[in-house]
Figure: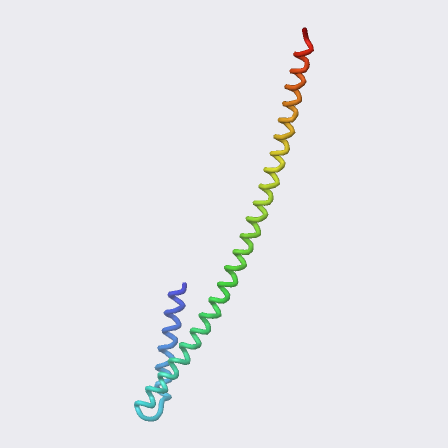
Length: 112
């Protein structure tokens, strides 16, 4: 897409130069200077257009990065919460098992 656009822009410059050549006046040196000025003006316009396109693309990329960061942060927070819940369940289960073992030890001691 970029190559096509660049080629199309170059073609327009060529067409504009040939069209402008018929409007030139003065000595050959003056005509060359006029053509150079026209080319520089057109190149400046292209540079401005490309800068605007780059700025737009950059803004789009920054927005996508922010969205991705936000999504990742949400996923990380959910995983952290899930992990904490699992750890609490595991801790509770281990505490119950410890109590059962302690109770069994007490019962075993009390039996003759």
